[in-house]
Image (cartoon, rainbow, N blue to C red):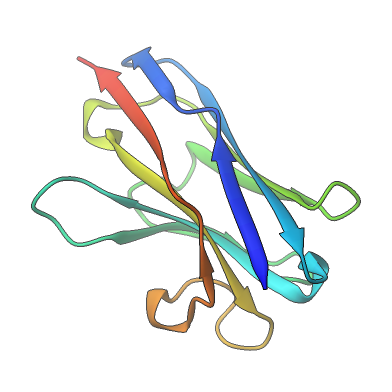
Amino acid sequence: QVQLAESGGGLVQAGGSLRLSCAASGRTFSSYDAGWFRQTPGKEREFVAAISWSGGTYYADSVKGRFTISRDNAKNTVYLQMNSLKFEDTAVYYCAATFRGRGGGRYEAMVDYWGQGTQVTVSA
């Protein structure tokens, strides 16, 4: 079992920045790919960014150049640095863990564990 706990969400003005953290506990997190997904009311959850167990990174086109995903395996923590935030980035952001070797953490259908989510609200 892997337990995931997100933090760092909140209210920010458009153009501002936030850093989300996802703290993992349980089994060896370094063997898992990690990802961030987001969801707004009435819409399906969508992929935002992922980092594989070996450090490869992937981004949705909508956040490329603005968001940066990273991980610190010594702290069992994954980060999502979000810069130049836009109103349309408003969503609940979920951390996810996928055992390595199944797409780098990009695919919702492959996710083994989810966090509870953290709200990010960007005011226009």
